[in-house]
Image (cartoon, rainbow, N blue to C red; front, top):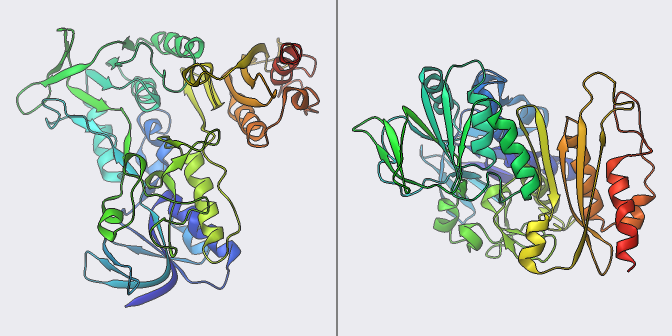
Length: 447
């Protein structure tokens, strides 16, 4: 039997947890056990089908583990004896631990649609060989139907059309694509951008059944309409991989995620931690459970878990929910609460907008108009959220907004920003949109 001070079950967030542990406790022996032969960059999976050209260009090298002194065991953990602190693998091997981390991630949500198991219906799995087969199917397809107009569905639609003569239709049950993540203005902008490429969007529609004998030939919608399809991609969300956790006797919480405290310790066993998609999330704003699954949250939790394994060091502040995407070369990003979220909770807020070119002057090459929308709490002036669209700078501007939210900055604080600017890299300091949107909030917040 092998033994280690720390054993981690899982892939991407498990790597971050292991590295964090080694940084804080360099004398501890760490073993990572995972079933997958190759770890993929989850957020990069849609780009396999266009921009990067194959799953081999979207992997995290195992050398990262070796560099940080973490031993890798490729195998499937099938049992955990908490009393004896022993993990059993499918091949019969056993591994002893002092501290254990569940970082088992998530898998695709598969809806109970009639015909969902037909050939050429593809849930988005985080498996190298599976995704390579999916690429072959995309290359042969003439009519692709994507079920789900969230990030996964929209990114797949955008990527699968690149370099191919293929008809792509996205089916979304809500009135707008990306509606769970963004306000109407940005949803409409994103839909318009992808429709420019020839992708068809159908909202307020549900797939009732998948047509065909063994292979898919089309879909029947709840409205009665039928669409041709020789391939279907499911992009409607993910569910946590917590089967082993449940078998181990760990308490599960919201949507079957593992219940953890602010130190990422499980409620059931102080020597077992959990992080990433398999762990329960609570909102930064009200402490209530939330169902977000984002790599940014997973890696943050992993760093916290690794640091806290032998001494409480870091406290998880909760999920702010920061994300970004690119649709037909235009970036969209959100940090924290949108106007839609605040309306659902009844919060009194002040909302301001600003826009500016991301270069100065606007005539610089590749200049793009950046739009910013900020949400402030009416009674305190504290920033609650921000939404953006524009060029590549949006990807880092949303991180600035996340830092502002995390540190509960007010509009007055943001007005005093001293931002670094350059004609080719940023908006002009005279009209920097984050600051200008904050400036517009100051007077309404004082009345």
